[in-house]
Length: 292
Ligand SMILES: Cc1ncc(COP(=O)(O)O)c(C=O)c1O
Image (cartoon, rainbow, N blue to C red; front, side, top):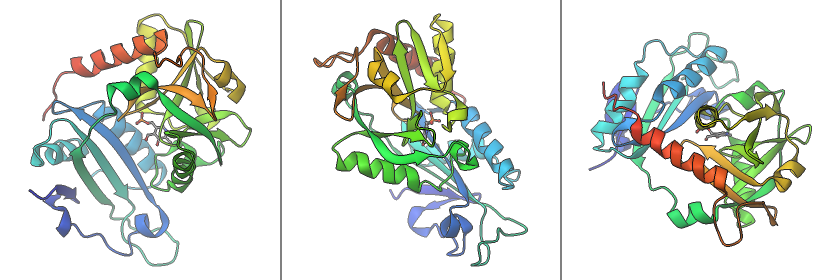
């Protein structure tokens, strides 16, 4: 069966989904997106993803009130007979003129797709990701750094550098040289029995998974410091991991060929990271189905 996608209120075969060549999402990257993960028919933290999207859409004067996005996401999932899936929701400012002036009366484009998602193997989680520090800097002063916008070229270029170096993820520093985030992830360090993660002032995306990890850590009595973090601290950390909605928590093994603490060369996950990975999976499994 051909994949069905949701486009502006209608579910249709992906081959029939048509977007204007003058859509400013396409012409100028005037668009936002969310990547979510569904487990057994339940979209994890959908409301938090929609809250982040709505907040960014308000900032960009991109009106979304006419859309029931929660229902649309679930309709797309079920129309494709999927229970465990990756869901991508994209909204753009819609069609405009060819000049770079936003349309005065925007009629947004909303596109949702759901597809099979195969997580990395247990061996990959055990051995952890190899990372590089990208040559690209995140600009903490740019409003774009806090939006999950489809203006994603910095992230793609950083990811390309990682791939070229045989690494799994690229880490980005900000313009001050502090650790910011991964190209598609947030970063956590474990030092002693505490977590450290760059704060939002560093220019990182306020990740939904990051927030879930911060809450889980608080529940089990692990302190979390959100602050400016230097790259040297990452190298000296006992453990480190990245987070995003698809990967959940992924241990980090090395940065630029240098080994990180507790992620031993034998490929054993550090104790704190492992504990958080387990309770994150319990959280995911324990969330009630909320099919509308
Ligand atoms: C730049 C960036 N930072 C962080 C994240 C993690 O966000 P979330 O946990 O909401 O998936 C992502 C997700 O793709 C991202 O693109």
